[in-house]
Amino acid sequence: MWAEGESEGLQTLGIVVVVCSSLKLLHYLGLIDLSDDKIEDELEMTMVCHRPEGLEQLEAQTNFTKRELQVLYRGFKNECPSGVVNEETFKQIYAQFFPHGDASMYAHYLFHAFDTTQTGSVKFEDFVTALSILLRGTVHEKLRWTFNLYDINKDGYINKEEMMDIVKAIYDMMGKYTYPVLKEDTPRQHVDVFFQKMDKNKDGIVTLDEFLESCQEDDNIMRSLQLFQNVM
Image (tube, rainbow, N blue to C red; front, top):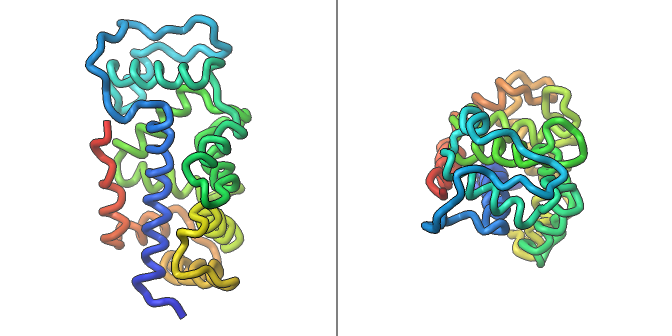
């Protein structure tokens, strides 16, 4: 059996991985530190397949300033000249950040969480909307976004099969750095503990309300949500 601290640690790790993975995208795009160089007043939108919404609209819809949106778009366009990111690009990015593991499945799940319209591509608007929530959203907004990531089939609740897929994806991504050494039944044990804690009415599924309530009762999860509040 797993000690209670180890099992809760995985739950906290899941939250941290969500936010940290988004930070890796920022790092990849060179956006962690704002440049002091002069930035043009308007977005450069030439020679792209997708042109994002105007700055004013995005500023109103997110928690980023106009200056921050300009920096974000410049980095996004430099790495994604077409103006969109597809799933294969997501997988290539995460393969670079987790060379000792297999990040393909986690990148798959994360991509579909970013791709809210299910078009098969992530536009700049999708990118900054998700980052705004993960980095500067309220506790409820961050947890709702995380719940949506775990709710793989988007039916409004998390079942054990979905949670098993997420846990396995995290372990695969961490690779040889997973500890203690992964045993065959380890993911199932963690999923069982997750449901013991989150499934308040013991009906075999975790609803959004149950997820929100359980996470807000966990001090470790609450602290993890604040770790990256001021990265930009």
